[in-house]
Image 1: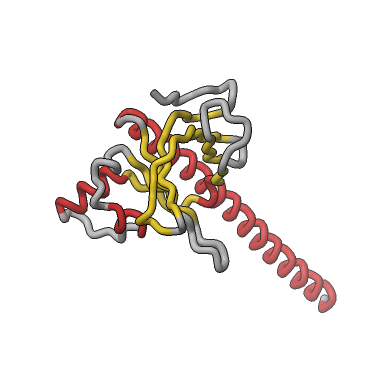
Image 2: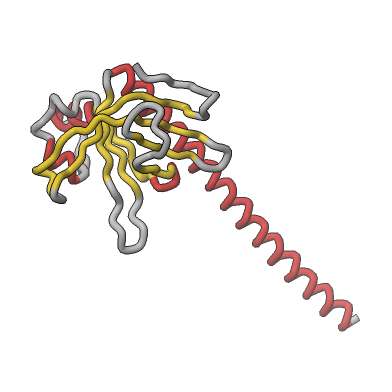
Length: 182
């Protein structure tokens, strides 16, 4: 069972998962590896880390929350696809392995943004239970959304500063011209 808060180590969520790993760079050759997943929420950054085991010293990989483009609760996506209630563009992993619905029951797909020529990556994690999935997805979405709001607010403040500076400098120039004419 996953833990939702562990303040002593700074983890917002932590628990055992299975991570889909492709072999020989092919999604057709794949396996599920046991991993330990932790969501850390810092002051300005948040990270998703996965380890070989609980208490692992070095993470296998760290995903910055700023890189996360989409979080897909696979079970809900598969249901909406079967109901034809929504038309969605399934990420490539799900197109290939959507026949393994039992494996995808408690899974979450995390898609990162593409940067330059590097295409975004897709990480598929299978949680131990529905309760783990229901606690992890909202926690991750909350962290990503809070960072998005923080980034948008910072951007708005910078744009406002630039605009005020432009107005101030423009008015100062006009005042200088008026004094010279007077």
